[in-house]
Length: 466
Image 1: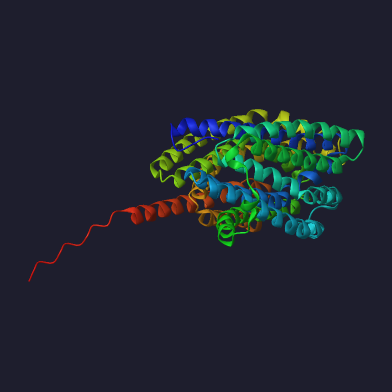
Image 2 (image 1 turned 180 degrees about the vertical axis):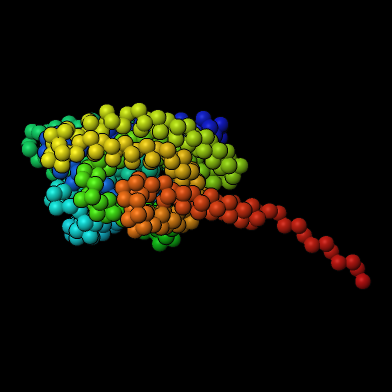
């Protein structure tokens, strides 16, 4: 457990973010392993089908990540205020709410998989691969809920290293299961999804076992699971806006994917190129994810302790690290685009790839260069959105997702029709810019109102005696 209310903010945020970053990289590695093995064993069509599910997967699993991150913010605030009884009760209620959400989500999304893919105009060549993969992933929502809840509880009390260790173990297990299921058992893309679900389930279970053994303050009792409507409302008041924010952002991504699917005839192989390029982009942007996670916990603890001056210092540290991350991310994409694209795609893996291999590499490079040139806009989102979330203003932060949705809808319905694939490549940057304008304005207003509410009231002068 780590108290982030004392010490140098720059050092604290860096040291907290580093294990989160390494964990994110390992998570991307085993996601990439799924894609590479599927692409080289089943073919480019299977790779594209599995990869094109990213927006739908983010819609559901992003909701899970968001709601559990919100629960973690509440727990961090209790920890910062040294309210350990309240913290344990919040953990117990998080378990109950997470279980209810798991049942509801699984019952809703599994039957909706095929209709949603059809709504997105998923090309017939990729449809069966995408549907089969998603059904397995969504049937295992419980494993994602378990891991994210455990990891966010540990991060809330300042332990960002333990989730990293279990995530590394999960990554190694996932790779082993990939080879066993995909190559050994010939389950192919079904095996890739099953390996992801099982490795996450075991990692999540290990988080909770370690948490209860290692930290006495986190050991919940039966009384902590007693239903409390007020506490449940408080958790949901932070968690649901964060969950909806992820889902709203995902809806914008679905618009993008739908627009791109519609370009597949005019730009043969563009969907395949995007699937491969997006995996590279995900690597380059994990620094921002780590900075955001560190800020949410840092700001949550300092808000709970009433240390608002340290919150401002945390924002400055986050922006400094975001500038450095944007420069490094652009260099990564510029220098490694073609070698990594070739890692995913063999020139003979499908008829489309064989015929348009050079064009596909060009589509991927174009997307990555435009995307990475605008990474600082993404960094601003993570800094100010996670700061607002840590302050307990996740409802305000949620509307940043609405502005991103507006930006992506604009590009999907207008810019893509005018500029084609180039318009698609600019879609994320436009969405990020919309969100940045809203988030910076919202933070300034929230901070101004807080200062005004805390300003000491000067008593009115006494009226002179008659």
